Image (tube, rainbow over all chains, first blue to last red):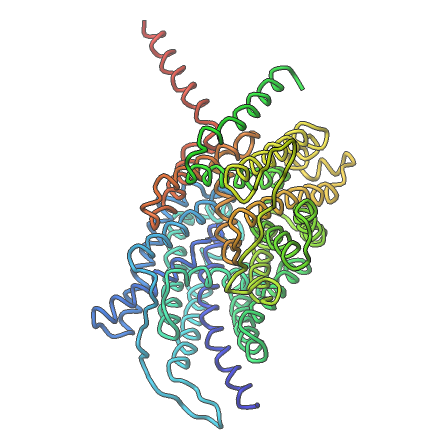
Length: 285
Length: 326
């Protein structure tokens, strides 16, 4: 029983970090561009498929495949920002609808291009570390590690670099930031790029842990939105805590009941939070 | 109502009565008509909810509640159709009322998210509650709504043509009610709330009350639509009422146009019929939605209903240009 519990906690943390990565991208894009990128889940899905094709079909090592995927989807994000979202920036409704349109588009294209059969990425580090009755699989440990590293990197960039501070400025007040000479367009592109890259990495990691399917994006976006509501929109710390908590809840509740009930519980919690404290744990908006 | 509008309505009714006869030989067209009718009801109900500025992403969840209520009442509890059918709408409305009070206090995007998550919860509950709903395998063998005999005429609603009429009659009644609401004092109040909640509240409009009422009425009709669908298809499963179907209804409404009453009707018609025409390319069907959605978002914010207007003003500008050059 206890072994099962720790196992659940470990697995929950691993999936939690994936939620964190998705949520980080989502919250970054929302803070800077004021758009809830509904299609973020599809970016995650595309990231996973790029990793699959580059790594499994192309024979390139998983790590480099992740990098390539991140760069590709980051680039896609920048293109989307420049040609689509820039035109409708500031207006909430069309932006959300455009994002929904993108979601449909990418998902349909994925079904057409990749087929609906599940695909698998073989485990990069097979095997387990046995620690006191708990089986810590190496690839889950890798997920936790990558999650930590990327989050710290993002925090560093935001708080220590000029670009990062520009992002903070825009997230507080875009007009004032522009008055200070910040190139809002360029920073928006950059944040979209970073956000999408993070999603792509999350997708690749999840693909290696579980499997790939064209509809895996829907799962990601619902979790992503749940996390940023829990943690608070606009807060990196919130995204981290929210992601980990949600991951743990999903995993632990599933231990005692079924996966579906765990999801129901998760969503009910989110609904309660939206009603009681929409700002979430650390939000500011 | 002015004479012109009554005339329009009468024409609509006549039209509605003639079309199914026109297509009576083809089961396929009758099915498309049934689906159009159901989608029109769904989209118009969403328009009502959206007319106070609430974007509901849970339309199909309420349709699902209606569908399963109607099916389960008839199958497991032996309710007759004339009880089960309205009850489907009422139960959906009751659920809507329960969640509306907390939900409507929350604005804009948060409300949309709430309805999204609620929709997911409904879908998950439907798939989990196997004893009632057949879980993931689905619910089979939903009875048809029965037969009607009078004056020696026998109508069996298990057949497509009578059922098509049933759907269309319900649709016309729904549109009538929604139209009257739109044109009534209630409709004006809702428009005021959408324009500016604070100003409305300051003139004494109980914003929360009206938002709850609109949400409930909208969900009532969504439930009715769901019930219609259940008795047409005779088979139900949780996935039909998930997130993407709700998104489709939202797209029907946006594509058709939200402001005018006929907007959702046009949107639902266009986006039900055109994908059906491309049935062979089933995988590519959603791309039609995407294309129409982007077309509307970038070129025709008001929706497809505005298309005649836009063409007219283009022609006018061209003509004026020609006149000034002459």
